[in-house]
Length: 119
View 1 (spheres, rainbow, N blue to C red):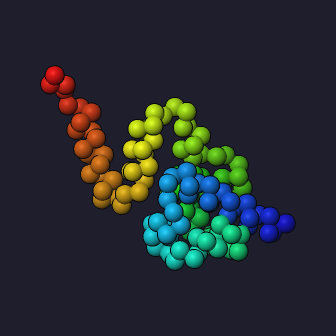
View 2: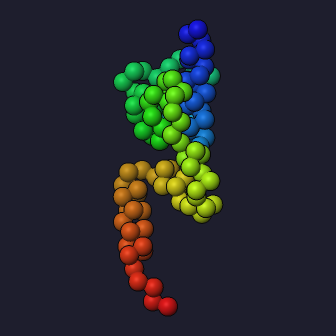
View 3: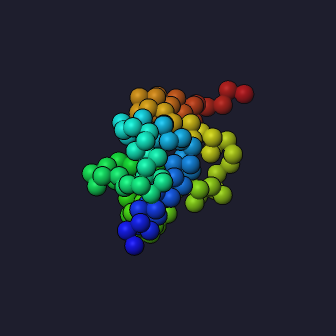
């Protein structure tokens, strides 16, 4: 039973990681951990520490309940049919940025959205 739970968590981490367009090394960098930890989670060799579950969920844009239990999926894929291709690309780019670049991105996007069309 424990192996099934660990494998399930690992598969959900991998699924969410791929949905946000990160490789294992990029996820590890965002979490300030070694890439081998992410590999071990996804291969069902170990689980993230309890204190890290919420951080993993936040970075992957899912709930901790979904990561642990598979209850409610809350990923970009679930809403993909509502987004155009360019919108998906923007979301993926945003999620790959560090927090400073994300703030600049939002500021620029807000300024562009509020700008009146000159043409």
